[in-house]
Image 1 (cartoon, rainbow, N blue to C red):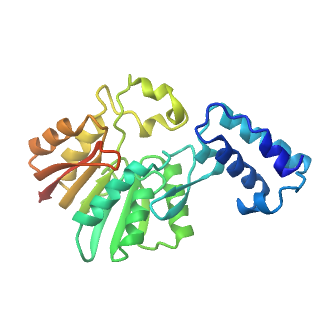
Image 2: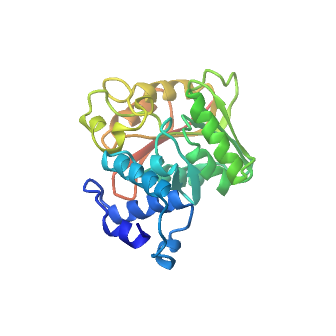
Image 3: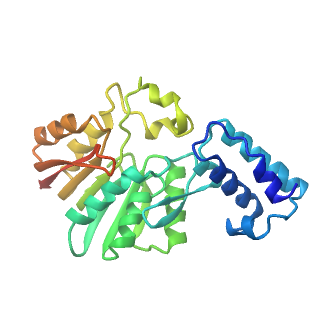
Length: 273
């Protein structure tokens, strides 16, 4: 079949952008830019290319996230490799990056990204603040390997990644800024059985019965490693309990901030240990 014929028969009823999804999957198979589809609509796919494309379409039809099928996802100004071992970076999390850049030190600094996943947050900060040294940690070895790969591909030598279950592998290190997008969904939340979340790692999503188990641990343990701001992404209804936890543990200047959709998405406080 020709490119124009293939795209004329797109069938992705569960997608909000079926044509775009189909084009992205097709150029992935072809190894070409999207402009190729307009320039060479009469190109005849080989049998292998058509089979590979139809396999990807079937997986997308079953609900598998387009980012996992492509193996790439844009975040901030970066193009990142992604994999099912990590969460898919989302635009909402860019608010955490903005706040870190706004509130973090103006000069050289040691910055920690807890639960780094693909390295999205750490690498976005590293790209904007070359004088900062970013350390990203994750309890999943595959995530550490993926984040390291992204750093190498992007040429960001001021970001390094290591295996650690939160602070367990960091010894007595101290940081001028700590950021995290930890798991914050309650284990019985019905959204876990819907959409992209069905395919993302539950260890990066679920945090106890109220969604705050990991947040509690981070807030408590950060005090031994911090001399500045702690900034945490959380669910849109969790600002009040997160603020209460920060105040309970002695953080100062506790506040919350909204994302681009007007949802309260990030809370934080300062620790002067």
